[in-house]
Length: 266
Ligand SMILES: Nc1ncnc2c1ncn2[C@@H]1O[C@H](COP(=O)(O)OP(=O)(O)OP(=O)(O)O)[C@@H](O)[C@H]1O
Ligand SMILES: [Mg+2]
Image (tube, rainbow, N blue to C red; front, side, top):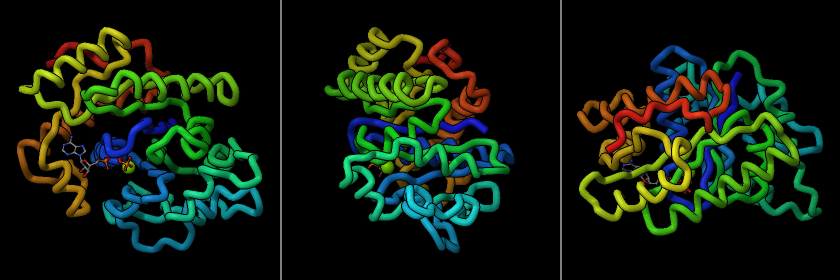
């Protein structure tokens, strides 16, 4: 059961979009997928609209008598194959533990009780603080998301450094699955420049193809449906890209070694 964390230094770059796009791609292939929403903003939970949420990730992650993950999972509004461990605002305090003890293994302990899933996707909050590190400690692979803008290089480096730090301290099987470059506009010279900069620095870690900016992404999210079910050419294009991202994550042999084809780079 591969566990994939989706993370970034910056907010608003597309972590939730990538986590949901992969969940939709998995569901379209009849795979059973669990989305763990570790973001106090709970955006993924909102889009997935699970019907009956009795407990959230916050209840599962407490060190003190945690709720078993099986009791907290809720079937999403997308259907039976996609289940959600819901986020909620109370998660925020787990990013700043008052007792100074981060409990780096709470997510791993919680997921150990998970059965019947082909893929677990963890949507991280917009920081590299405790919740993201806790997610990384429980993951096989880490997908870094960035936009092709001025601080992309520095942001990706900090995210990859966090992956390295958690790997050496807590989780030797953790591998970077790659860097997703999101909201790429083929006509924007700045985007091309920043993409080339990322490729020069990280080579095959930069996942090919990049994710283009398409209005269907926000519209499908607003409607609470998977991009795979949104009827537009842009949605079909983005869905094909997510379907292509899936196999290396499922094999979870880790990446870094270039599991993503480089043929179609713009
Ligand atoms: N490829 C895209 N094309 C068009 N809109 C996009 C694309 N990717 C993301 N967006 C939109 O950008 C906004 C931010 O995306 P998203 O919520 O996925 O980012 P995030 O990194 O999860 O944010 P946060 O850090 O707040 O959790 C959303 O409104 C989303 O619909
Ligand atoms: Mg998000």
